[in-house]
Length: 590
Image (cartoon, rainbow, N blue to C red; front, side, top):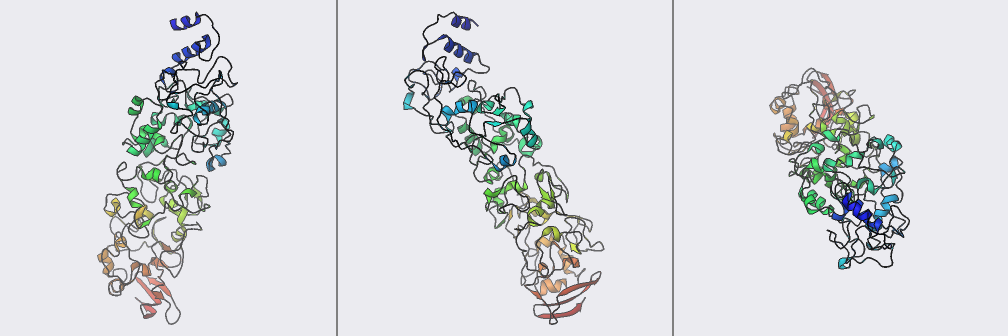
């Protein structure tokens, strides 16, 4: 306190912008006494003694660049820096904000004060009191290009100057009540979130003038409450972040001291939100993502290096979910079944804030699909989904853009929800236990007639653990179409082998199938006539025929009487009316 008394005892002198007047020195003293660090030791000290790379030629007063005791320009607190004349900033907007009826106005309050330097339109030494502009070393005028020059397009910066109140928190379940904000995070008198809610321009103890330590995204989580984040795989990831992320963070922390940058945590969990999001100058406006292409924010880590399973490699295979086709079409408020533009991106199947490592058994969804929207077997939208097939049904059932069936069939049905309906005469047991409860002699243990299965038991990466590989599970991509875990030839004329119908032989014993245990002409058709499994069987399900019989019309046509049907006459018994490979079948029984 002796320093304060010394200042207060000084005789009053003429007020001057640069002179050590009583109030100026008192302001400087307040800066020195601020919690944590003094502005004197930060890059906001643009005086000749400042520690940063931008500083004055001769100006000794560190406060004058922002404040003055006399001739202030009318802005509080005793604002001295010339205000920006920009009145039409491009502000943040998103479909989610529109859906929540959140209006982001032009910057106001303390945010305008920050932008008087940080929009890059006003010289840093341009102040209101006094006649001459403060000259900076190296001929610096406005804020140099880089992380600290936000420009006038703020659409890729965290929104500011919007009202953050109880009403907003009530409308948005992922936003905390303003009543729960820590004392360091302050709204202005009109309950608006401003630059100063996150940044304290006088104190740089946490780097980038943050108001609190943001390790583990503590500052972000003061306001944001993403579903299940604390227990999510990303929230708990202790692995080192890739260099592309840590290097970018270091570059964006140019206002932090070198020691702070060097000490910055490098694990995924410690970096938190900043693994994917940027508060300023993000590459993607709608979600403030660090990479412009949505999938790059995921594949940056899920590439076999940071995350040991190489999902990125799966998307380079011949058959993939086309995540790059309409990547810009996705919004969190779209119609989940029939969006305006059909698309698939990582975020359609995975909630990065909730996904976890919880295992599950068929048909239940694993933690990888936590908090994702699906469609039930009855056709209703459900969030969060409970069964894995509910995710698949969202795009491959009632969606008008689901696409044609892979194989031309006697009965055409591309709606997988209807194909797997428990009301059908036959279906693979995805939604429920199958209809054939008497005998399926070819099933390989542990499969039984009471088993249920996942869609991903068939549609999976060919390098997944389930296929005997070391890659990732999931229908990201495969060398076998349509994203099949194992080979399945769907054209006739191919020699039968364990590899030709490997997908079928995953669950059905090849030797038993070829022994004709369930159909005495199996071997004749598949080996001798070289007919594919899919020539007779429709893998998903058939409404009006048992045993998944739904003929491939490329090879099976009506007989000479115009008949095309299969009729079951008992266990392992039936008759066919059809023409196949030049042979006319008229009530051919077995």
